[in-house]
Amino acid sequence: MVSAGVHIVPLMPARDVISVAVEAERLGYDYCLVADEGFHPDVYACLGAIAGATERITLGVLTNGYTRHPAVTAAAAATVNELSGGRLVVVLLAGGSMVLSPMGIERARPARVVSDALRVLKALWSGQEVSWKGETCSLDRARLGMGPQSIPVWIASRGPRLLDLAGQEADGVVLTVKPDLGAALSLVDAAATAADRPGPERFYLGRICYTPELLEGQRRTLSFVLMDSPRRVLESLGLAPDDIAVVEHAASSNQPELVDGLVSGDLLRRYQVSGTPDECRTEVGQLARDHGLSGVLIDALSSELDENLSVLTESLPIIAGARP
Image 1 (cartoon, rainbow, N blue to C red):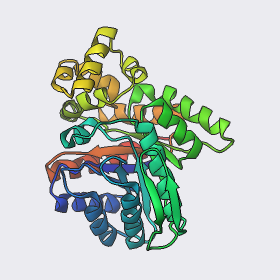
Image 2: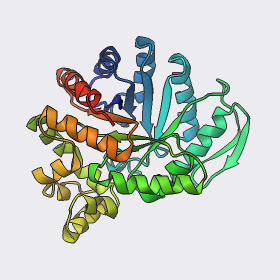
Image 3: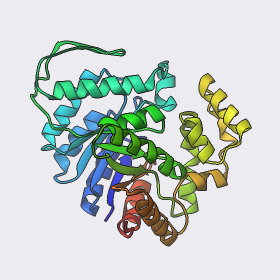
Image 4: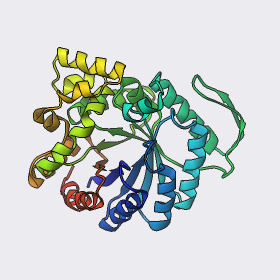
């Protein structure tokens, strides 16, 4: 059976973030991940509260090495791990335009930033004193005050270098573009084979759009997804060379509005699982079988609590009914 998880994008009050997480555990979800979105409710404050309000569900943070020094992330994650009784997973990603651009942070050398962050986390979680110099951050006789920590690290990415890193070193990989799953996982598997290690667990992240309204709701974020995607992913979505040029120009100039006109209904359906509940259940099952998925993670990104709770309730039977 495929594991089920919720990925909360905290475009809502902090109390609602906690309410969604508590309801996810009550319904039987296996994972609750919260995104580190910078200008929205703080991810670690929310996760600390969630840790105290839940007992079973695995918690997670999706974060980057640009907006927080990885040593700060290591300490914050260790705190939540202790508060939750060892239920935390850290998901590293390169950081997206929606967060970095308003802070004036250039998304430079993303693979190096994630790789350095991974090394800092693992080094500090050893409990030892660490001196180390990377290309984007460093440590000088640093030691984590909470002692050794056993915290899995996943990588969420669409880029080839980070998919290689996931195959070489991560405990899990999170993929977000439906038509690119096969190509992305082939990169992960090749890297794992070259490193002579088992491949990481595989997770697909995306909203299951079992109503036309849910599918339309994805329109508000897809322009940013396209801007942060490599050409391989854009081609998998069926974009023509001229359209890809528009996306690349928008990304380099931080003008997402230039991409909005490309986000058609057809593109939304290619990107996302959609249809009737039965059609979505069939599609999720096919994805799980074709790609050996460990789990499916759905987005909860509405500013309205009732809408997020409804998505949780309606999506779980679709995932639970998908047999790999």
